[in-house]
Every structure is written in C-alpha cells, then in structure tokens.
Image 1: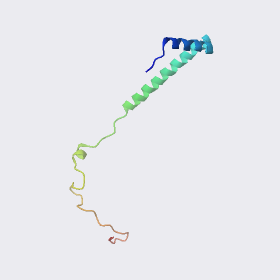
Image 2: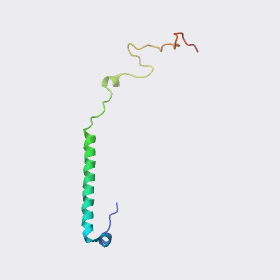
Image 3: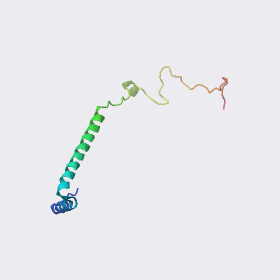
Length: 94
C-alpha cells in the first residue's frame, strides 16, 4: 500500500486551509472522526450480532451412519416401487 509522503501531506494541508479556512477545517476533521467512529461501532455491532446467532442444526449421527443409494435397503421400505394407477384405480401399462 502506498502512503503519502510528507511533502504531499503538507501540500494537501495548505490546499485545505486555503479552500476551507482555519475555522472550518477543525470542524470538518471532528465530523470526519465522528463518522469513522460510528462506522467502526456499527461494524462491531454487526459482528457481535452474527456471533450470537445459533448455528443451524446439522445431520444427526444416525443420518450419517445410514447407507444411501439404490443398494441400501432399510427395514420397512418397499423393495420396489408401486405400479402407476389412474384416477379410477386401473393400472397404467406402457
């Protein structure tokens, strides 16, 4: 990161004094400092609010241990899919 040199800072200070005067420049500096403090405070509050929220529940140990896929069979589950039927109960053939 490039920082301004001492001569550059002096030129900026002289230009500021010429443009805004000796009375207005300290007021502008104070309001700029207050704005920066409020910005940092709001960032800290946002960070604190994000830390307070509980984490979302993840899968249970039983879900992680259960096999998945077409080869995995579980008790009580049908071994094949039911045949398709129409609204009047007749089987659909293809």
